[in-house]
Image 1 (cartoon, rainbow, N blue to C red):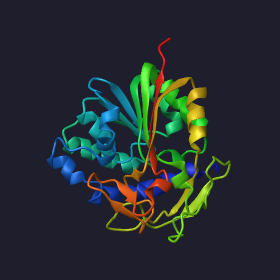
Image 2 (image 1 turned 60 degrees about the horizontal axis):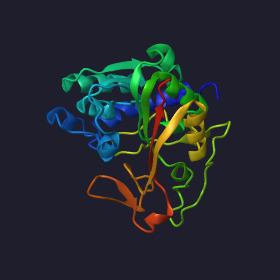
Image 3 (image 1 turned 60 degrees about the vertical axis):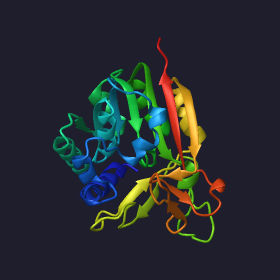
Length: 275
């Protein structure tokens, strides 16, 4: 497991220019429409509330579309990611969109060391981030340390039940992968990615982990945060189970049959109580 960061970083360095060129990420729309927001941020606007003037950090920010969206809503944003290729795309997008965002290259577990403790009113983490981390308690400790007293975590993620589904079984919803965090990673090798791209990935191997919903909530409580919201959704912002989903008018993907049978994502908020 010692080389998981290098293996995963190589994969994300390959993905970054492909994602930036993909119509699904909509970078041209961001550049031409100053009011445009990512699907992920727009979905949760009622829960996110007024963030004007807040100092925020987006952990595992990738190419910065959610980070830019939060900045457009008035937050003073910093983005952090371990992929230099992803950050190059994020910085270029911010520059061409005339938006001041600081981007820092670092592993998420090193965020407190490079950004400082107690510096942020808002820690934001988006879809598809936690599965790259082997230790959810260490992540929760990092989040808690980054927040100022009174600050909050805002998390929208794929549901751990969804992550455990074997998508290669199109005839049934079959549990094929761990639901709970395991010491060893799940190892995959895939040349594709979750959006339509003009090419394929060459560094195909990834190391990933699932974390049960109770493990995530428990880690945050142990880190000293107070859970303020947990909402499970029957939709997700990408085609997680190809051939079995349809895209609704809001851009979310839902199960075509029996959507009541499977949670697809969730939104979680937690607060660091003032002393």
